[in-house]
Image (cartoon, rainbow, N blue to C red; front, top):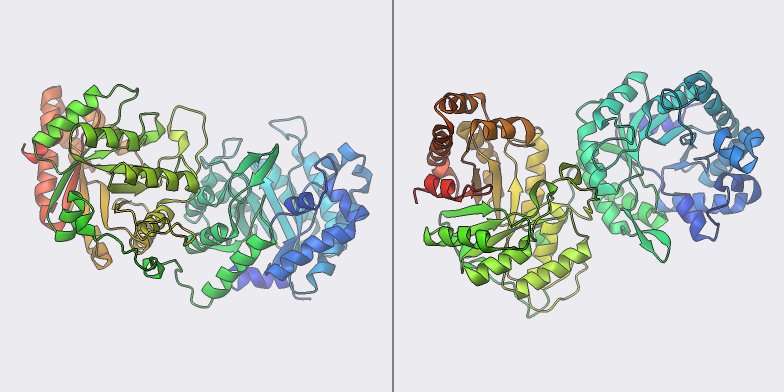
Length: 611
């Protein structure tokens, strides 16, 4: 008999998996101290009802209610001797619920114990435990297997071996990673993906632990190291504590938007994990149904945003002096500075006054770069504009706030007089020195769309906020991206979401940069080049080796090495000279420059500008 699941894997189309079983059972009054796997024996109708809801929502693949149905976990409920029975019943329930409209995969999760070398259980013992679960699922008639939420690659391999000892039916092998792209055992996305590919799994993927934004980053890394189809089943965002309960707040529409981005990144099997419901599955299925025939990017265009009658958006040239220059094609110059680490502002204001006297158009205020704690960028910008009288361009990140908090910030900042934004996703928390979690409700594309809505007097739901905000919307673009095709796609989405200018990463190689500019001409927004006057050889080597997305060519490093032989001042002077040469060579191809003035480099930035 033809395995319909294998046909789905082979056809190259995008397919929809179901969402969370435990979330649904909990919502129906099943307490967390109950063995959810035992419900296959004691309340099969309830389990079947959940499966049926997912099938009606559009799931093409459903998972059995057996995530913890291995003998080790079942032993906590004195059910280990019924392992095969529990799994067999679960498979039969799922097949009955599918009504031949969906394939059924047997869900297998971790044992809940550590195996060698991290614990006393041997790999062969782990395989034996998993074999009992696999046997029951096969007797119940599953079409394939979903090995999911594994953090230990060795344990996942034990489960894989157990399946392959008994059957050749398709295997989805999914790991669970943190926001830093590592498992709790320290294994990277790339390492795990390569190993799973070598084993011969049918599909490799990710599930659980993080929301869709962080998972998208990991997916993009996976696509570079495997030829296998990829699956992605994120949680519905990160859980929030609400009334002593863990609640997942990512809306179905939000999950569907990220499903789109994951598909564009290379995912062919998309669904949900903790916190997701049939409502999430339905929205994801709606996207897949619309996008599938065309196989082209689908996104919400700025053209779809229409203000309320009488609430006309402010023309770009009237929003700020910066906006006027951007709108009229004038060359603009800005210098970025770091807010203070503490609350004393005298040094920051002194730098800004020097920049104003020199005639610089604006000060770029960085927003906790490298995930280091500093005074807030919005508060710093308000103080600078009030005390110094120079316009600011505020770097605003998605890392530290949920969408509601960002909207509140932006409305308040508009009321305080801020007008110019540079929207960035933000450096991941692992770069900082604190143990904290990034939020990433939305990324820079989504936030650009939010600000564009606010500029039309609307919130993201289309509700009026009264008078339109007058923000000039900037975004970042990386001409050094390791995957230029993806970077260009994301840049296109940013422009279509509402971006009005873009700032690049530091430029050290003019020819390569100009080739990138040719690829972005059709997008039709001004490009400002990032210019970084190197202050030392050590600074150059740090950028070249330790800062993601910054490329310092060997020719520049060699110039800095030679200058460094003459001392620190010679090296700093050479850094300024290199920056001047780059700016002169690319000046006619861009509409402005953004110089770094952080780490005490304001004077060097002015030297580059000839001030």
